[in-house]
Length: 299
Length: 264
Ligand SMILES: Nc1ncnc2c1ncn2[C@@H]1O[C@H](COP(=O)(O)OP(=O)(O)OP(=O)(O)O)[C@@H](O)[C@H]1O
Ligand SMILES: [Mg+2]
Image (cartoon, rainbow over all chains, first blue to last red; front, side, top):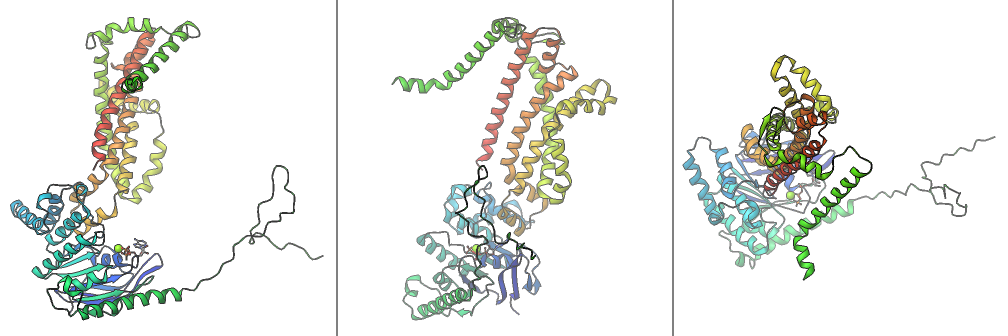
């Protein structure tokens, strides 16, 4: 029995299909990466798992229970961090810890929060407001907040996409380290195939939308711990990467050729420039084709 | 060099030029078309006892100008507090519930433009049974009803403008209603609320004069009306200037508070 199970999940917004027929099984302790182009519905997919959105069709099960709404058993790192700007780093994480562990003593909560702040190396910034932090630091707070909730599953929505390459590499290592420490089930959305291959056990492409669906998954059988420098030279890495990218590009170009363009002529008639403009009203405005009615009555 | 010196003091000089221009216009008006208008000099002479002894109390309706102002401020403070206590929650409900908005928004839009002069008689009728306190309660009612709307509407806008991201955080953490209110909804809409609070204070101060004039309560407005009836026109001008200055100071104070919350 899989830990997280998506069965034929579809989602459309007001008749516009975004996700179509998504089926996915994730085992406990697995790290699954989902790669997709921008705007294809990755955030929508994470929101469905988080319970922030309801599927139009299909069902989502966590631990054999239908997902009906959001809950702290699924820690989520939002794409745009979503820290509360009026709370400090410490308070943002404390809010989550309080919500999840209402019975803990204040001391225990505080200690717990400090532990996770230290885990993402933010102790010096613990009393700062989000507006005083860099993008990477905010991202780390967001990760710490999700981890501190000690969720059963961690949902990461492009957690690193807003960062520069160097910070990104550092945080990738950090995520990898944290994951290998307590083996949480992780679903990570990313737009960077390399990142997915470096971190995940399985990587699944999301085809280009609209009506995106999951492509064939690739099991990443590279040994752990993976070193980013070595991995770049590994033949298997290159193979996985080529397979993935080829699939994704194909899914995109298929989309392009399958778009049928219906040519619609402009609804306007040519203007008669020979007619002299009338005094005061000037030249009559051009007529729309739909306005001209055949009104010649046969005598 | 010369220009620099001027630049440094123009914040003082330029407004003074404006004041001087008005004084000259005033003087000319007294001499030409408004014969009953007291001159600036006469106004100053007659007002002097009320300004140099601002807290004197010579009789019920004969007190130093700041003493009158103080009475007015207390009344405004009560009415304004009432407006905030009622207006903020109403604004919250309007912001949170579409149904609530549909029910009450048309009503609010109709009541909002009604002048304090129209509300006051109704206030007096409402509290007729209160005897001695009727005029105070009527005035409070009027101030609260008139000054409530900016708070109501701005709070509602602020609540509607809360980014979905913050609400999602509250949902994922399954925060309780109270916690969501105090940790998310209120902090997120505070800047809007304070804009409403500032506008409401301006209106509350505007209304006080009308309320005092009609009820004859001691205060700047009551004093103004009494002196008009006693033909001491100089004091009308004294009251107008006082009301203006106090209103200005209140607005400045509120905008300092408002800006403090804007930075969040
Ligand atoms: N609440 C909504 N209402 C209507 N349409 C929506 C909503 N949320 C998302 N969409 C649409 O669904 C599509 C996918 O959006 P989504 O945010 O899931 O993309 P994404 O893959 O996360 O993009 P990005 O890589 O830019 O984060 C977009 O076309 C978007 O316009
Ligand atoms: Mg997204």
